[in-house]
Image (tube, rainbow, N blue to C red):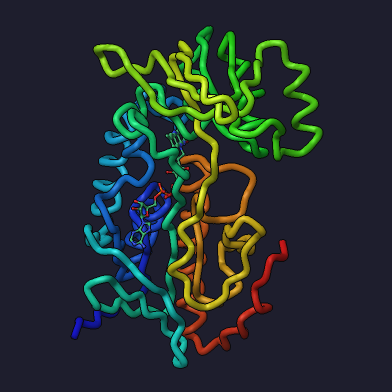
Length: 329
Ligand SMILES: Cc1cc2nc3c(=O)[nH]c(=O)nc-3n(C[C@H](O)[C@H](O)[C@H](O)COP(=O)(O)OP(=O)(O)OC[C@H]3O[C@@H](n4cnc5c(N)ncnc54)[C@H](O)[C@@H]3O)c2cc1C
């Protein structure tokens, strides 16, 4: 039998959004806790170098993560690492229960879920070993590191098509590798891609392995044609993988509104369709996913939570859950 802990606000995930929400909640003198299944940092821990966070021309991902954590703790937020939240449920009395894999319950009248998302991996040799050293899942973040280079993009959907085109701003040559002989992406994106002289499509092919030089920097891809079985090498210094991104929203037990991709829909206060449940960062339905947008969302969410709690203390009635969810924007 686990223990029940009570807080003003429980924050799930210690990525940039969770740590920023903790900073603001702490500053507002709320009793806040951040529950993190690993160690604080989120996707920053998979990012070699960040060059687009204002105030830092160049900062290592893990260094920025450490600064976020130290700053949040300065204002009194508690962190509990190695705690995997398995479900978040709204109780009849309006409180939320966040239950962990150990069976502990963290109870609070408001929750900010900042659990981010997970890029789908190819699961091939070299992929994890060389992440951040030529293997990337984010074109807008890492594209600028591949100026005048030859790189590859893997995938056949909108993300792969759009990002292959985008990456030609930097790279001299971009191969788009797709396991079928047609793309799944929208026609307008395909038309733009096919007109781009820097892009070459490699159809019916998969990457079997990613190889690197003595410094661990990617320099070769092992390709296989799925129709003919023919194998070949492709010299490339980078590989961008866009075969899907899954928001980590499966822990929300009540049906919160989400878009067709499963990202949570919020209002401008970052509140989901479940009153008292706020969402910030990569798992929120929005145009782009960056550290700056994650901390922007989190700032709004934490300030909105403070007002929400004050409303509860003043006896304001909490509205009903809006809608029943479904795939509407
Ligand atoms: C390779 C790569 C490079 C990038 N480079 C840049 C860049 O240069 N600049 C930039 O602005 N952005 C970059 N990004 C994007 C940026 O990292 C994300 O937008 C940002 O980290 C989102 O923050 P977040 O807090 O919403 O989510 P995340 O960073 O994903 O953090 C979510 C946290 O929640 C935790 N968590 C998830 N589920 C649970 C659970 N059930 N219980 C407990 N904890 C849980 C996770 O362990 C994780 O720590 C990059 C992304 C990638 C993948």
